[in-house]
Length: 130
Image (cartoon, rainbow, N blue to C red; front, side, top):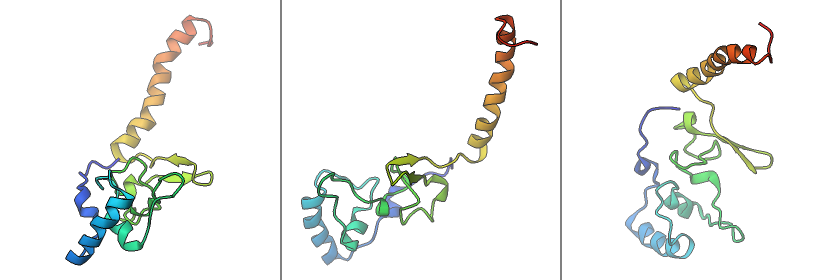
């Protein structure tokens, strides 16, 4: 993953003072307990979105890169593709982004290091022939 810090405020849709007043009314109805820390509620408001009436879930469209399931469906994915996962199986399963840089190197080297360390034990137990 990228080590660049994420400032959630940089992923906020700007509103005019009049829009902000309307947004506050809209937010009181549709997201009264949501701080907007990891979701651009102002963007959702401006786009005319509301949460799913059954599940209360918001579409990924305005998820910020600090959201746990930030995906390539977010408008902000093009700004931080290194942090964007994806939904598969009819949007029922989230797949996190592939590791990059040092994290990828660790992932690639760790399994082989474990195999080397495990081989003598497996040989001693008679499970693997030398």
